Amino acid sequence: MRILIVGYGSIGRRHTKNFSGFADVAVFDENLSVLNSLNPQIRAFDNLDTALDWKPDGVVIATPHHTHIPLAEKAIHSNAHVLIEKPISHSLEGVQLLLSGAEHRKRQVFVVCNMRYHAGVATLQQHLGSIGKPLFARAHVGNYLANMRPDKDYRSLYCAHRSQGGGVILDAIHEIDYLMWFFGPIREVSCKAEKLSDMDIDVEDFACLCLKHHNMTISEVQMDYLRPFKRRGCEIVGTKGMLLWQSEGKNPEVCTVRLYRKEANTWETLFKDTNMDGNKPYVRLARQFIEAIKNTHSSLLTGETAFSELHIALAAHKSASTKNGAFVSI
Image (cartoon, rainbow, N blue to C red):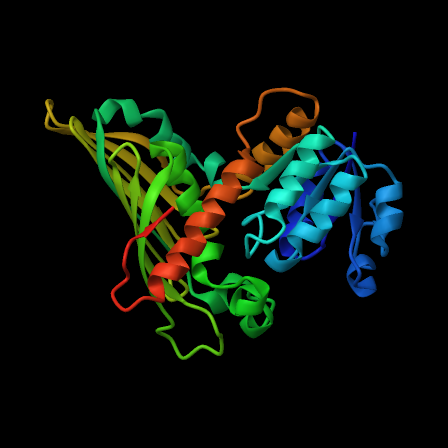
């Protein structure tokens, strides 16, 4: 099987390494100096049409948000299945046309949401039934923007620029994804979002979202580019107990998931790892994409659901632009 990686930045390099364990991999990037750093055993292209003439079975798009749709359209037109880095795009324009074109050609579109394969999120999902009916959830994620890519000036990152689809709401769409995975579709969104720091960016670096699901569960998400020490987690309260996931740090990441049972009045540790392998979720995701191309069942985020999540993220922006963060219907 042939997999083409489009974009050889930090995430493209990760995908290249991981997919090489399952398939014949090639890389396309317009930056020749980047391609020169490739392992000589990996095929390299500096022209997309030439790369697609190689006839990849799957194309992984690992470029800034605002370039996703035109690149995915070309890949679908070449009869490849597509895996797009999250979010599916920075705007709604062209997304439905892409999905319709893929359906017409019987090609699949998936979006990278590696947090589905993170032990913290996966453990929460596996034990949701233990807490009865979920009533509310409170999720959070935060990491200082300048620390996210230590080898680069944060001002050069696409996530620092509105025109390239930046900002913490779109960047942290993982949280919206796993909350929808847990509790189903969202009907209303309220959001407060601002730039609180003095960083040289033109996007929000702090946001609080309130999500009302159709099943009446209410989720809250706080996300930021401000915390000097990376933290992520989620608390879920149900009629029979509660679940608590906490992750702190990066390399190493310390992860714990606990369950409180109301009747027993006890805490149980479901998962604990003091040195999480941050690459494991990406390896599982790569394997899932290969299996999906082979027409095997996959738990990957579909393009259709990713489109719904983009609607929610953009509705959050719309709510934040109002005076009081009014609820916006989806």
